Length: 212
Image (cartoon, rainbow, N blue to C red; front, side):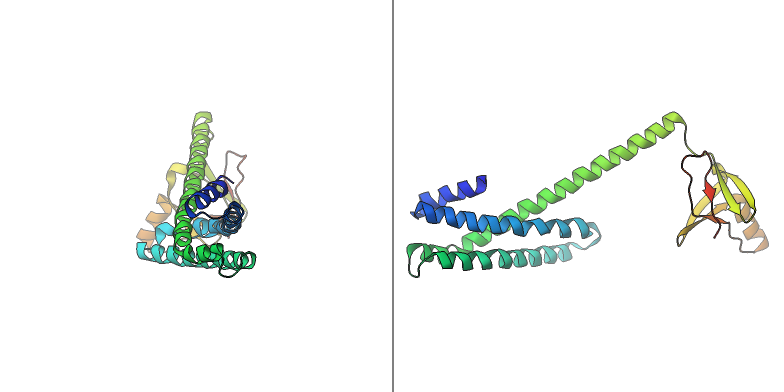
């Protein structure tokens, strides 16, 4: 609303346009632009910008800006042409202000996208702080797991956490490897695969596992 009033005053003062046309121009173009920038959240949020090259990011931004200007200025100019008479002072102003509106659109695009990125950064920081607080509470309450229970058919193997050498992802499951099984694999040259778990019981002091 503040942008609409400010732009109305600027157009009215510096172009000698009637106040009604100045207000209508500002209202129509700014309202359309406000609806156009809402979908910008999706490319900002879902495109992995950090994993892409810089020139690909630049091309993506230029493509989005081009599409935004087309969707914004097209309907805006069409509506304002309907309200204005041909060869009227406002019609001349409308045609001569195209470059100014393009620069205005690019500026507000940059402001909007930077605002979205800032919001994402703040949310990521808040989530990181929450995770750190949860970890600190777990350490303080001594609720960390010290052993893992792996169910192998009818037997349950209890494995101390410090004996686990590494954990390997395997589809929807996880393979646990201990130093003992790794040494057997090296000495006997036999491929041994530990039973893997699927279900975690977070309320227990043990990690109950479902074999694949």
